[in-house]
Amino acid sequence: MTPFLRTIFLLFDGARWDVFQQLMDAGDLPNIRTHLAPDGRVRRAVAGFPTVSGPAHLPFMTGCFPGTLGAPGVYWFDRPAHALRKSVRHSVRSYLTPFKVSNLNGDVAPFTPTLAAVWPDTQYVFAWYTRGSPDRALLTRWTKIPSFVRGFLTKDWLRCDADAEAAQNRAIDGHAGFVFSVFPSADEVGHRFGPTSPEALATYRNMDGVIGRLFDRLARRGQADTTLVVLSADHGQSATHTHYALDRTVASVFGTTLTYKRWPTPPRGFEAVVLPSGNGMANVYFKGDGWDLGRPDPERFRAFAMGLLSNEAVDHVAWRTRDGWLRVTGHGGAARMREVPGGLIYVVEGTDPFGYGPLPATMDVETALHCTEDSAYPDAPFGLLTWARSPRSGDLLVTSRLGFDLRDWFEYQEPRGTHGGLHAQHAHVPVLCNAPLFEGPMRTVDIYPTMVELTGRTLPQGVEGLSRAK
Ligand SMILES: [Zn+2]
Image (tube, rainbow, N blue to C red; front, top):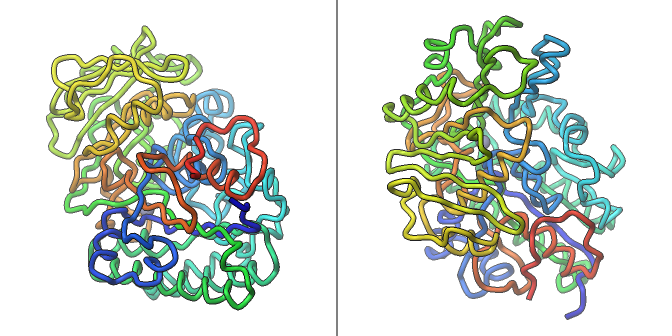
């Protein structure tokens, strides 16, 4: 197959795989069907964990898992930095700020693959991570804040997508070899009105128009057959009816608790830190005998963590044991797991916490995906183990049950949609592509190496995903 000459990657933030398939079945996505899914079937991938923007963008841009790269949440706490500087400003990272791009570019592990390493003329639209590219490659660096503020004030997030489309058109007309575009509407509207609300479904139909106009533009340029077009999402979203203040529960047992952005924020003297991401997962950190002493013995919080499961809002709790396992407990049971070269060991204690059928005790990374992909918790064991790789991940991980989230204060709107967790609604994302891919399960980390192969480029060192190009 002749390699594609250029690539357009559209990240439709927060778009669910099953919603795409339902709208496709109803005949609502004619352009996407024509150009990206001629058999009417929407391919799906399992998103990187945690399933939250920022961290979950990285698999597409690096071929690596968020935890491998040191991005275990949209917020995280840096214990050594806090011990050294004793300042929240230096120890709590938030990617929900105007500085997200420079922060993420700086935080991601050194020597990580980049888009620029493969496609030096990459241009970006509303992207969060641009390492290796000059500042001017981010076409929306001056227009993003006005666009998003207008979206917030007017609730008209489709105009943000129109801004993304306009910038993407400039990149196409400017001959960029790779265009990475983020379309924010499905996530923003899903949070505001619910992920399957009429308003949210309208964003998917709008995206169908974007794809139609994109292919018209490429056809006018004579590039429709030589341009690789991929549409995917960083995570999905589930509907939310109840907010649970996890930080208040932690504070009631451990004392003063830092929860970033709940005002007032204690600048120091806190005993624990609670940082929800997408609001369906939270990294929780405990001071133990001191922030300078490393992670505390899990015995210090084990009984508390198990007690959290008596709350209907909490789905799973997970922590590292003293002997190097990651232990996950849910309402159904518990399992411990650990990485081994090329795979993992998974030991159920009693009943499987994810409701899986019998699994091999030792699985390579592909087997772990194949055995769990079509379940309520796709790829949860391996996803959790990649999260646990990061020294910045919490001492304790808490995830919420469907219908609940883990905070009762809000960034700027009361969320009616939740993500961040391991549920299929959060983790199954669409993969729509105008090139044939191998059948079978895949992860979002596979898309980067797939695009590298389809464009005939050389795969950088360190990519964790596998090409699924046919
Ligand atoms: Zn979101």
